Length: 334
Image (cartoon, rainbow, N blue to C red; front, side):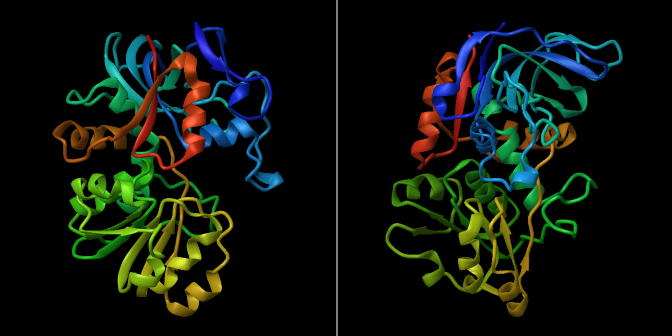
């Protein structure tokens, strides 16, 4: 089969379209003939060698590596012990995350093997491109905001992450136009929240169409200077600057940084009575099945920023590096 492989860490130039061995189907797995692949930040984190992680957190990687977790396609084969899926089924999945952090997900390829527990039927109402754009970003928003969906220990903090009620609450979403952000806006609105979206001005019409009640153009005014009495901040950008949103929150409010590494305002948050919490998204076929019904009905929509043929994965990563993404970048196969 053809796949995008890399033989060293580096920038987009290390991604090569080349022949690769077909996956070997293991018990409990299905083989998917891939039609589309969604891009996500962990793709470029792995491509670069996880430089943003502390050394003790960096997984040991064996080359060659095939990036990618989010796929949509058709079942080409099933292991003997799999009963839930059959050859010819249209499916989508987030593959082996976070267990595949070292490159074991292997999504940038014409075929990928996937544990059946991580697979769901593709929503009939959307195409492969939109289905591939959903899994990691939508599961992230859902597991942060609605239902964690597992009992694994939290690697990011000592306590379990707990979503908070959204109905009737004020929810601010920072980085609202991106992959996780545009789903967070829709989920908050779907659950009855008043939504404040933060993004650059070019995305205002897009975000209001997704349900945002208010919009803050961060290029003109700092959101923390104008937003007040917020119940929940979903910071889809995250990192060391998340603490700047603490003044926007009510006492008893919550700040959920999607990327929590570097957060340094824990003492201030505790003094203000604000909960700061994060989790790590995990593959979950049953949740994708539940979310598939919302995607099928149009209650949640997947926005596509751009598409590239699989062979042009390097250009797709270059597009991601330029930022200001509206929705998702997707690779297409055949």
